[in-house]
Every structure is written in C-alpha cells, then in structure tokens.
Image (cartoon, rainbow, N blue to C red; front, side, top):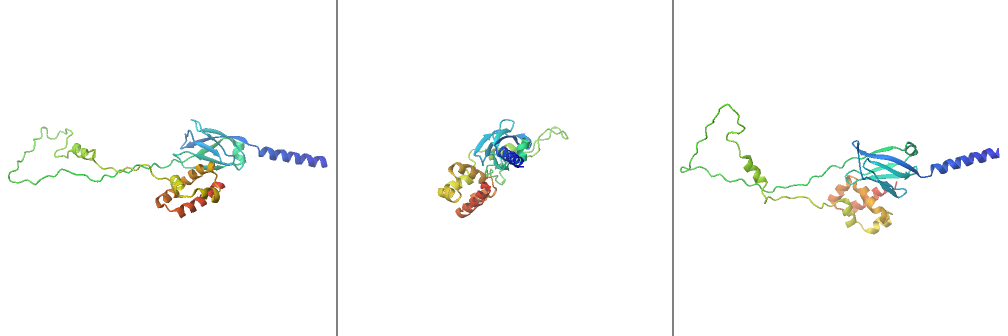
Length: 232
C-alpha cells in the first residue's frame, strides 16, 4: 500500500513539473486573413519576445497562464492569456485590427475669383460662334465654365494650407507631464516595462480624448486603471 501511494505521488509530481515547464508555442498573426510581418510578440510574464516572419508565423516559449502581447504600430494592441489548450494545440491564430488612418487636415483659407464689371454703353458685345454641326456632340459644352481656369485657382502656389504635423500622442503626453517617480513608486512599472506599458495605454481609444484634454489628474487616473489591466 505504501509503495502504491509513493508511486502515485511520484507520477503526480512528474506531471506537475512537466506542465510547468516552458514549451514552444507556434502561431500565426493575421489581419483580414493577410499575414502580418514584423509584429512584436512579447511574453510579458517571462519577459521574452520575438517577431513574426513574412508569413506571419512566430514561435515563443510559454507556460500556462503566461500573458502574450502582440504589438504593431499600425494595428490595435492584442493580448492573449495562454491556456493549456493553446499549448496542446500548438497552432494558434491571432487576428489584429487595423487602426483607422487619420488624414492630414488641409484648410483653404481664401479663394478669389476674377471680378466681372457690369457692361456699359461703350462695351463691345461679341456674338456667339455658330454651331457648326447642330445635333452632333463634339465633347464641348456650349457656354460652359472654364474648368481649367477654376482648377488653377485651387492649385496656386500661394494658397494657404494648414497641415497637421508632429501631433502629440499619449506617450509623449505622459512622458512630458507625469512625474517619473509616479511610474516607479505608484504604478510599480520598471524602466524596461515603461515603453511597453505606454504603448498598451495608447491602444485604448480613451487615450486620444486625454491628449485633447491635457489634464494631469485625469491622465494619472487613467494610468492607474490601465496598470491594473496591464498587470493581470
């Protein structure tokens, strides 16, 4: 009886040790069924990382309950909690959503059209040219507007345009306004984790609103909330 009990304990201990050993997890990152190249795949728990290849494929060592983060600047942040089923399957597919593209704003301040003076008694009236072939369409518009002249008004070199450049993003806002010790003392974020954490926060749509408001208290409260998500 004692031998059987020891054998059972030994088998259970072996299975437990095997389940806690890191195993290679293979997967593929896609967006609308298109493989994504050079996506950062980060094992936040083990603090290791890799990148996808041209086929969107990656391999990384994981354990059950590890937290994987997928990051690419043109796509929304993705997080995956690894389960034993993921490891057993060993062929996961991760779908990332493309960020909407923000177009530069062009503001036309003034358009001036040539002034036309009213006709007087000394004005010369030019007769309309006769239509050479009535009923036959030649591609021209009788009495039509000079589209080339109108288009040139929009294309003048001296038109004023306001183009957005070097926009302030959430990462720049946080680094410029939030005290450095707030990250280390209050959030317990190490310098190595700070870059990744701010990228994680920037993926939240609320971050754009905070950039517009530029309120330090709201920004710090947002960082505290996101830190709880980031630590899980």
